[in-house]
Image 1: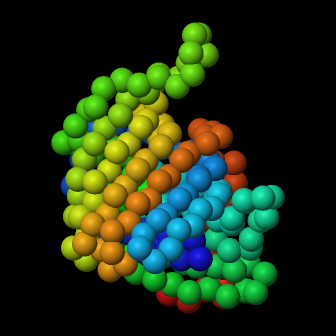
Image 2: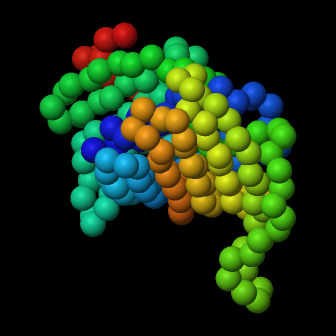
Length: 200
């Protein structure tokens, strides 16, 4: 359910693609997602793999409570197509992507974002230095979004991204993305392979 809700929010932003900062061009992370609107509230823990060079990313499984599903979603911006894949059931459905790659999952902070200043997590020598930015965007379906992005001061790695959506189909909504265990690079590029049973 949460993966379907995340798909609803994905690929819809039309913010300009120029950026104030972006994280390393390739990284892997665990993404914690919470989505709340007038009809439901749900959260999940996903594997998130981001390839800024080839303009693709993968969100897979729900790792909550040690449960790993066989579902993954590949977002392939050069092909302007996303793929929902169940590797055990061997099912796949394709969907059209909209918007610009750099605007997805609020990974990059767009130019024009307002700095809300430096923030720090923890204390003493182990504290994490971060910056917080705020910006607005409008999606292709008319939803208005206010985004508050907390990123590391060094390398602009996302920490917490909060998006408040108004005028959406499901009413107003709140989406919170937390990025944990961020590792630069991609260990296995086969996660982006489209199975033969997928059709475009």
